Structures are given as C-alpha cells and as structure tokens.
Picture 1 (cartoon, one colour):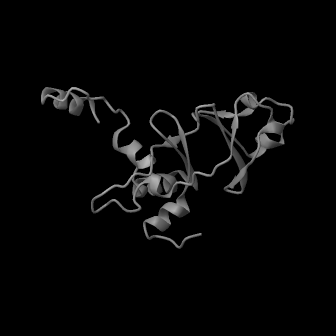
Picture 2 (tube, one colour):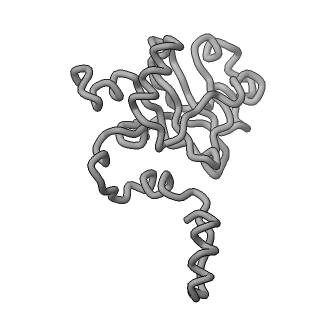
Length: 162
C-alpha cells in the first residue's frame, strides 16, 4: 500500500500498518488475481515469458549456460544471486574467447519495462523503436522475463499466436 494509505489507516486506529512500496504491480507479478473490466491480458505481466536463460556476473563466457534466440541472435541475461538484472549477453558477444569474464563483455543496464505497463503502450514503443522484444523487471530490478511483441499483439487481438 502507499505511504498515504498506511498513514490513513494509522489515523483510523490500526496499529500494525506497513508501507508496501511495490503495490499493485507486485501483486500482479506474484500471479495473484485481479478484478475489474480490464483485468484480462492487457499488461506486460500477463504475457511475459519467464523461462529465460540467466548467468551470473562472476563466471566465464564458457560457463554462461543457456541461450535463447531473440531476433535471430543468441541472448543470455546476467543477474546477481538475488535475481537483479545487471546486464545482457547477445549476438557477437558469444563469439569472444570462452575464457573471457562475463563482466568484461556484457551490455550493462539493458532497458526494461515494468510488469504493469499496458500492452498497447508497449506495442507502440516497440514498433517505433523497431524491436521485437523487451525485458520486464520489477521496480527494484528483479528480472521477471522477456516480452515478445508478437505475444503482446496476440494478447491484444492484433495477431495470431506463434
């Protein structure tokens, strides 16, 4: 809940009130039900793919683990032990010396969107920037997954599922 709501509850006599910073977005990320006329597939969290390969910052390229194909190129996301997104490996980076530390070659701080971002807005931004996918992370930087434009368009009824 917001700080304002927490203070209001305290003013009404509730003694155990806690500020919950993440709010509704965190509720949706946890997969908890939402209600209302627009609670269907209309936000990033509704169609994000969570099964993305990750690796740690302190490993060598040869130990990076799995990769996925995004736009015809390999990609692996770099996270810390808490799941915070730190960077991304993609494309030609995988052709480097296998003994290269990931920290030296990764793309730091990739662009992300929040899980409660509306799909219509995401589709418009991706089309404008000519990208086929975007990473989804919480406000605190925890990686949720990857959102493909085709999935967002399908959810909006603008395309056939792939």
